[in-house]
Image 1 (tube, rainbow, N blue to C red):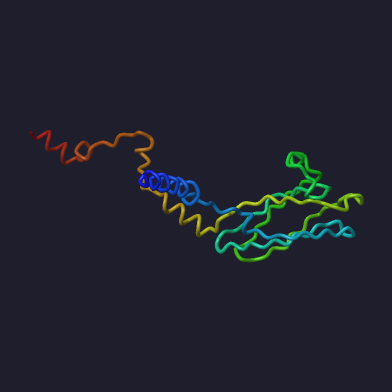
Image 2 (image 1 turned 90 degrees about the vertical axis):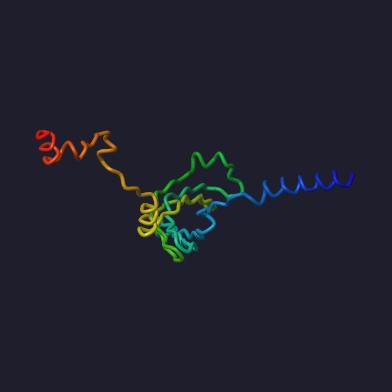
Amino acid sequence: MSLKFFNKKFFLLIIFNLTFISKGYAESVYDFLKKEYEYNRIGNFLNIYAHNSHSSNNIRVEKLEVMFQNCNSVPDGSWNNPDRVFSILENVAPQSDNHIIVDARFPESATTRCYRLTARFTYSLDELRRQENKSKKKVDPDELLGVEKPNEEKNSSKSLLEKLLK
């Protein structure tokens, strides 16, 4: 009886390990991108102070979406039709800051705003070269085109002479 109890515990322990411990965790760009926003109503621009805390990857800030309401009251479906959308296209180098200025004129009535920044990792030229070198294989262009190479014997004049003399 105690053996069955032990087997059940062992089985549950294995299931627990497979479920929670063996998951691969991908890095999220938003774990490394820290940001602050500051709107200047007099100059009609928005300051974005972005910091990349990643040790090797660049972060590309691509887009800013703005809703004129408190973030707590924005339903998920509302982001399909934000009040303002700005294309940013700025890079933040690893372990550094970038001050991004966006020309933005918000209505006087928009005293509360909710911002959503879209970003992705980009890689340095060295990192791209390393990845490219890993995947490179020596490929013969004739092989790709399906062209058959003639045998050395057929092309060499020596072998042709030997055939004629025989």
